[in-house]
Length: 426
Image (tube, rainbow, N blue to C red; front, top):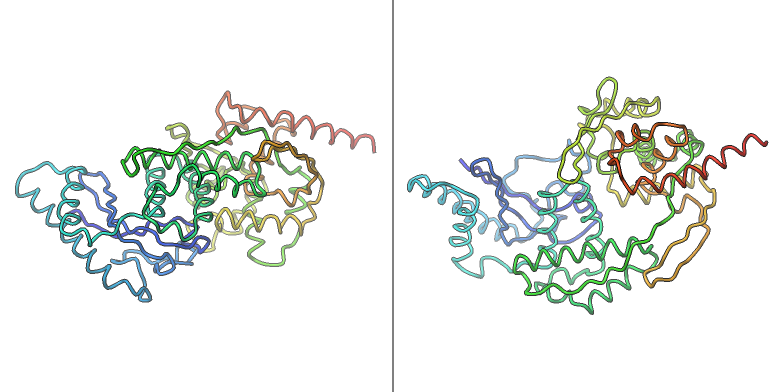
C-alpha cells in the first residue's frame, strides 16, 4: 500500500512564527522505496497548522490525517479536493497492480496529473511565486546538504520579506531586471557586500531552476558583483569565559547563551547544533554526520569541561535534542543582547565594501556583530592560539585539507598572539 499522507511544506522559521504566508500542501507516499512529493496546488496559511508556534518538537502532534486546525475557513473545500486526490492515488495503485505495470515515480506523477489536474483546471490553482520558492527549497533539501539548504532558505527569506504580498502573484516574469535592481538596492541598505552578493546569487539559482522546469521561458540576468574578504569576528578565550559566568535575566537568554557556548567548545555550525540529538552524545565524544560536496563524513568532537556541563544541564529535559534551540535569526538577535549583558564591548575596526562598491571602515563593538557563526570562528581561533594542530582542528570542524576558508584564521591568530604576548609587559 502506498499510504499517502498530507504535509505542509513550511520551513522551521515559519512554523516557529518568524515568517508568515501561505505554503503548499504536498501529498507524500513511496513507490518501490522511492519517495514521491506531489504538489497538490493547494496552499494554506502557516498559522492554521496544528503545530504552529510549538517549538518543542516532542510536543508536536503527529500522524494526523489533515495538517490544519479548525480555525481555517477554507478547510472544508481543501478537504474535498485533497480527499479526491488521495482516492485517485489509491485508484492508480490498484490499476497498476491489476494491469501488471511496473510502478514508478514518473508513471504515478503522470497519472495523477492526468486524473486529478486534468479533470478540471479550476480544481488546482496556479502556483504562486511563494509556492515556487517553497518547491525550490524542497528540491535543495532533498538533493543538497543540510547547510546548503539553510543557506538557500536564509537568503530566500530576504526575498520573501522584500516581496511581501507580491509572493501571491503567479507571474514569475515579475522578477525581471528592474525588479532585481530594486531588490539589490533594498539588500544594500545596512548590509555588507558579501550578504548582498550571496542573496543575489541564490536568487539567480532560483530563477535558473524555474527556467529549467519551463516555469519561465528565460531567466533574467542577475548581476551579483564580487564578494570581498571581511573581518573574521571572533571572541577571545577570556570573552567566552566572561559570557559563561555572566548570569542572564531570563531563561530564554540563558538557553541562547548555552547554545552559543556549546558552539564555542565544539566548532559546530548552527544547523548541526540545532539538529544534535542526545543519541549523538556518547561517553567520550559527540558524533554526527556532515555532508560536504556530495560526501558524508563522520565528525567526532571530544568534550571539553564546559561542553560536558552544558549538555548535562539539558540531559533530562524530555526532548530528543541535546540542547534547546530557536531559529537562526532569533538566536542572532538574542546573542547581541547576551553579549551586551556580559560586557563584550571591545572595539574592532572592520573594513567592508558596500553594494555600490564603496569601501567603508568603521569601529564597532563586538556585541553589535556577534552571531551564531561567531561561535565556530571563536572555536577555531582559540584552538589555533592554544597551539592545537591544524589537522586536528580541521577533523573537528570538517574543513577540507586545502580549505581556502581556513587560511583567513592565520592572520587572526597572529593578531591574537600579539595581544596575548603584551600581557608579559604588564
